[in-house]
Picture 1 (cartoon, rainbow, N blue to C red):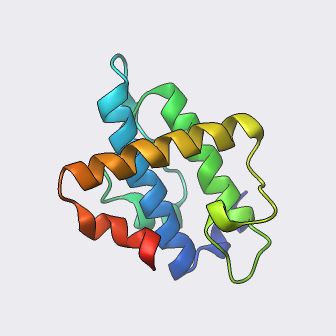
Picture 2: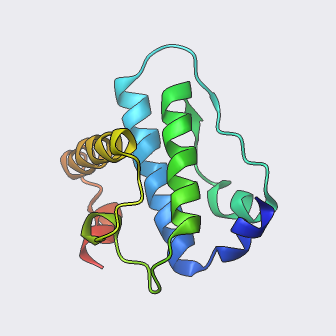
Length: 123
């Protein structure tokens, strides 16, 4: 598993940060109940995600773990945005869930004036 983390480059790190932000917003706004800090065991992953406030419910934590693994395993070079990819490596449930998270969090950021974070879609 640690060899996966050797695949972190600037683009993957940016995508991981964006997904982490969006999952954190979704979880904060939609889920009440028990939440725990997102477990980060690898030092390279910690460098990417350490500044994020990742206190997530178990479901969102599992979704973010899946997203991180899929970003690291992406066979495309250069990696396209997942919504534009022809492979769709996410399992159907995760794909549906991440779409819901991205849609909700994107609208949340627009409504709260955080257009700086929305630049991910433009670039």
